[in-house]
Length: 360
Image (cartoon, rainbow, N blue to C red; front, side):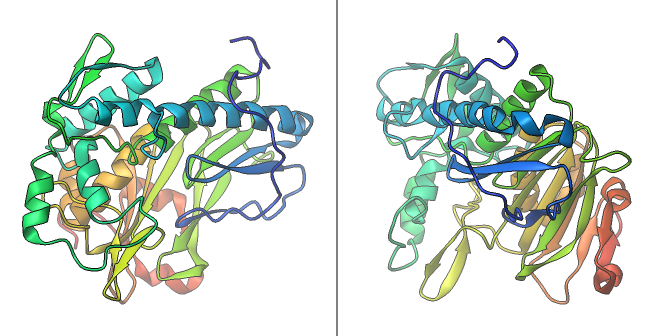
């Protein structure tokens, strides 16, 4: 693609300047001199493009181009669009394979890879369970799903049955469906990151609903600073993470998306192995070399929790994690690499614990 060429999908719309607080991550820009930001809604969340002072005159066309990338991907990957490739997969389940775009093909193969790597903890065919629990619906279920209903839906959940061949995808059983909520936004951020780099922008940050990747520096001598929101008090942050050029962050939390059934809140993250929303973890943040992997791993670490994180991370690409159990008093568990990049709020310095194979 020619540098500066528009993406042929979607249009431009000016966003607003604001303090970014997606999920449990808050971008600590605080209107710093020279930084230009634009925000817009996309892929079911808030997206923000921020550039350094040298590129402030390019913020409007760059934002339009990034928005176009996100809108194109949403048309392919969304479960909420009846005309998307993912919706067509469900419609054709048990009938015909579906030929998909190169982007959808890559995302589905990556999702399948992480399913295999995690022994099915991350399973993109979890969509029937997600729907059963009321996510994506305007009205929460009046009562908890019965064990029988969960068992019936679990018959349609198994990433190993997803057939990927010659850029066609097939769900072999009618009733199966795919949900790419644990990977699509991270992939979109990586696509936007590559585009911005290819367009000659050196200092920028892309944020899509807490999936973040940065390039360069906000100003000389500084790294990008990303605040980690307190999952128990959304008005404050736990501390900040210094994000070096090229690195990515993603977060998963139990407090931003949930359903309330009989006055009890249930997380949107469903364990495909049990059929129930995950409990015991309040928030997870992952730091690694690309946003797609960070997105997948934040969901995976949330699923396996503090006790399973060490074993999981031995199988995955290099990554550092922050884990907050859903319990008081607050404890902030960090792998050693993230402990070096995390600066806690002074009053929480004693809550920080280093996560090692033997420390709990």
